[in-house]
Amino acid sequence: MLDSTRYDSDASDSADLAAERSLAEDIKALVSDGRLLAEAEIDFHKKRAIYGANEGKKIAISFAIAGVLAFFAVMGLVFGLILALGQIITYWGSTAVVVGALLLIAFVFVSMGKSRLDRVKSVLSTEEQA
Image (cartoon, one colour):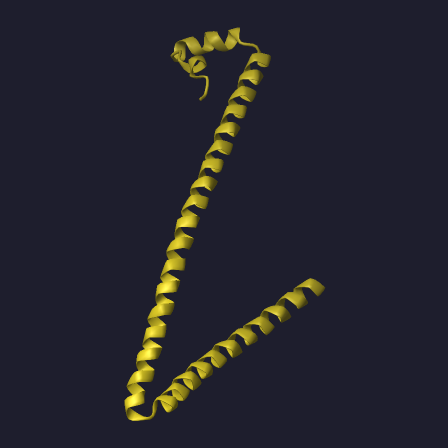
């Protein structure tokens, strides 16, 4: 905390106190207050970083659990789709259709990722040469 006892006097006494203080005392008080403020700021940022790290762990765990559950939901959907199509065409045929569709979708996403990767590489390589 700041040394608030230096600032307790009213306005009429402030002129008298200012005359009694020396410049060296004022500088020492300023340095002391600055040090206290810097320590408080550092402490604040440490606590903020600890809070962020703890919340980051909880957020990561939540997203991991959601990802696992979503994965199993999609697998259930794929399995159900294979069984449903198996009534119309054979089970081997429905497996081939579903797997082929999933591979086609995966290929589309790989192509999109590859084009973005190539674009990022070209942007970064031209910036490094400049």
